[in-house]
Length: 288
Ligand code: ZN
Ligand code: MN
Ligand code: MN
Image (cartoon, rainbow, N blue to C red; front, side, top):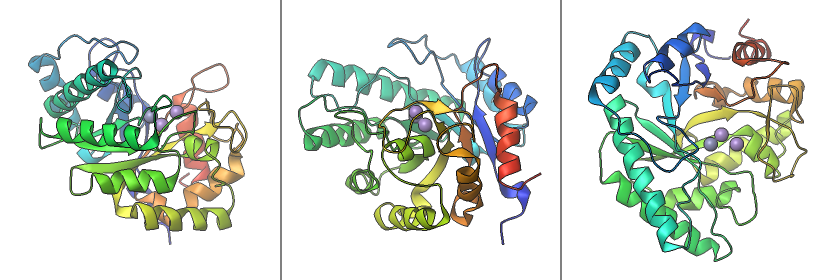
């Protein structure tokens, strides 16, 4: 039996444009019971410091929103590469991670999703060790923020596209405030078949064996613009990509996934908007 529909938490990545507390309004206006934000412009290195009065407005709105703190996530900006073998890039990346941890703490956001980055041709071991060092350093900053390691699509030199490797990284950090975020588009791009019940049973088994299901704190639900094993990180509307409606129907029926918050990072274009993708997920998850 699936849990009661109201226990399923669904949301999207929402904009903070205007002021950061607007993210909560944006989430509520499209019926989210979970959401994710960038705490700042994700495309630059530098960010204006977060003011306590702005953080406070966010916390106040969040507290009265009915959205639980375990269903609110921040995502690291795009430029940092925590796996970089270049000292300067690594240091700048670590500085951004430290700053994001502080911002999350101020906002009352308990979970920060990070991309694992690229070792740029040096070695897997170097890349993984850099990520571990960065997380260890950053976690010293605050004790109320957990870092979620997100699986990658398998672009050249990237770390953490395989469940096995993600598991190894998780164990290198075990005992720290670390969890895992699983992205369906990235899994599919990395070559994991997840459209059939059989493949999903295998997948859940692998996730549990290497990572532990209880350590998976977030699912990123995205369809894929490219075919299985493409290594391309290109998100598509739910059901309109290669995973497809039937694939998502099977994914969303998995008992193991229904207790973890679902966040969509799907496009917004003439075909569909965020509310449309949430509606599609509810339909395929048999929640409406
Ligand atoms: Zn991500
Ligand atoms: Mn993602
Ligand atoms: Mn992606």
